[in-house]
Image (cartoon, rainbow, N blue to C red; front, top):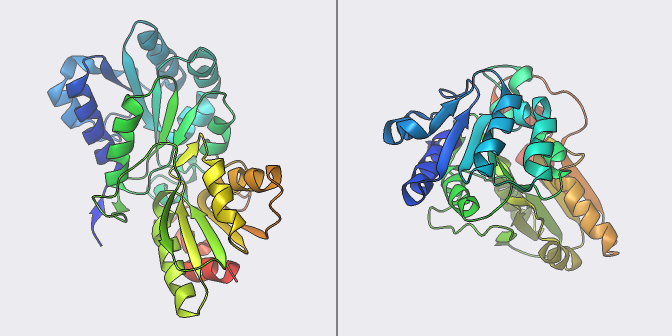
Amino acid sequence: MTMRGTREAFIQGLLEAAQADPAVVLVCADSFKAARAAPFAEAFPDRVFDVGIAEQAAAAFAAGLASCGYKPYVDTYAGFIAMRALEQVRLYAGYTGLNVKFAGLNGGVYGGEREGVTHQFFEDLAALRAIPGMEIVVPADAGQVRQAVLALASRRGPAYIRLGSGREPDILDPGERFEFGKLKVLSDTGTDVALFTQGPVLARVLKAADLLKARGVGAVVVEAATLKPFDAEAAAAVASRCARIVTVEDHNILGGLGSAVAETLAERGLARPLVRIGIRDVFPQSGPAEALLDHYGMRPEDIAAAAT
């Protein structure tokens, strides 16, 4: 399996956006090395700002840049955006609707093995999803990160893109096109169960679908790379033709993808059994990424069992 970091892919996408638009700038919070930002600094040394270990200042500073016509991207750890600087993100970017993009490193337990639980974030999507107007993208792999960065560059207003540790597997075909705000059906072998997922755990869901197929259980695998705005109409269309729904996310089961799907079903009166797989409202341990996902019930076998 080919491994390519989502952090590097973010910088590659940002380089392309910056080459096309002189207003694009990068803001770090003592996260320059973690963000793998050296290629951007080499190309645009006067368009990089590092405010130091001051994430709240980074959010406010980026909003100031946006108010002057710049297009800032704040690149630091996911939890430091979504929790430490949440008030500044909400007030200076969300409330104002300013064009500030946030890139969160170490999203999910998959990203936290090197720095422990303090740098392992499973609540970020729930916190930011509650901010009005905040768009959220959770790409599956490096190729999709690059495409998502370019898609967000053409959109106005605040947004958040979730990145990993920098050691993520390639999952999707390089030619797979990312469409902002749209669900994508990646596999369809029947209507016994719909599997909704996002982020690097997509690889495990695809394996689970293969296990189900071998057992004669038909599954629709749906990738929801855009969490907000959530494509509720497409989700409802898939759910209405499937007997059971399973959501799989490297995030707390509260407030993220599982919640978005549950809200969609409830609001449309779609009575379907729903199983939410993810971090079940606990503080996860630290450890090797794949082993952690196994420990917290995200093995392909666990997903397949929940689907039947």
